[in-house]
Length: 195
Length: 258
Image (cartoon, rainbow over all chains, first blue to last red; front, top):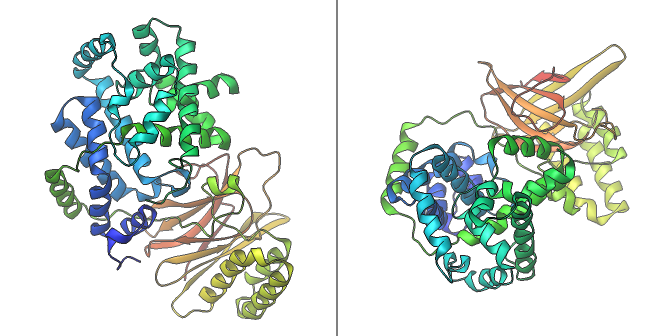
């Protein structure tokens, strides 16, 4: 398998090749998912240079600890994005970019008609994800957007939306579960680890 | 926090939207609760779809990553390779290695530990009886047969693992082929207590310099496939309350590859 052309390998097979020190497999994983990882980090951090540093960190971790990826738990892309998200949030919660971000988010919250669906880009899945997002009650949509793209805790989101913490906590979970149900029907989640 | 409280937090946790103390509480719970672990994985998968973007991977960053790869010597790497996918959804979602889960195999494989030479014919018998019993079990038979081939292969390193005290003497066998493909024959381990919620066996590899790394988590006696770094020369097994990063209890069985 490692001698195969990496572009023809599934994501799960790429990770096996990475675990055997095949740099071309890591390069292929980067080519496939580096853009999404960068896009999410930049969206959260609002700073291209810091997002690039974070992308570097995410892929070096894949190189050094490929066993952290479990193809039975989800796709490689979700794994990388999850790491990118949690590290971006760590950065946000620990430094001075926080205030700037909060100002920015406050502005966005006030914009009429602004919606999470504007964040969704990928052409192959955009339609289905958009449908799933649209099907959510507004309260769930707003809570998920502020938590995921704003990097806020649910407590902060509750304050921003002037809602009880318990309500926001529940809405994040129920909204994600509702989205998942819609997307399972469309075969975009729950299909294991292939590319 | 009750189970319901923790469950209610899973959505926020999956989006990294909880405080540090809540995150710690959820993580502690996840170690023991496969259902909640599966939910977090599902919710993260769903969240990741929101992040899909049309952006290309930034070109300059790859050059920096590649430069780091040259500068970093490869760390000790002991990678787990799962066996064939388990038939049930629950098993497929757990990070466990495939085992040969049947009483007949247990009998055969305990003998392996003491009588490698006789293994071949016994596994053939096993294969025949299993084929007759059920056509769907061919994957487990193949795993046992692959372990058999490895045991008789020139260049393979074999460790006879033993341990236990008093009346409970335990034995198991690990075999590692020259290419790093390993098999652990652990049918001789006692079944984990049904009420021991979340308890697992952890398989560890150690190098001569004393570095220890996890080879995998297994949910009971069985045969498992794994791959292992050539620098590993000792294999051991501990029983843990859940998946752990380093051994927290004494080895149940241990043995040296030679």
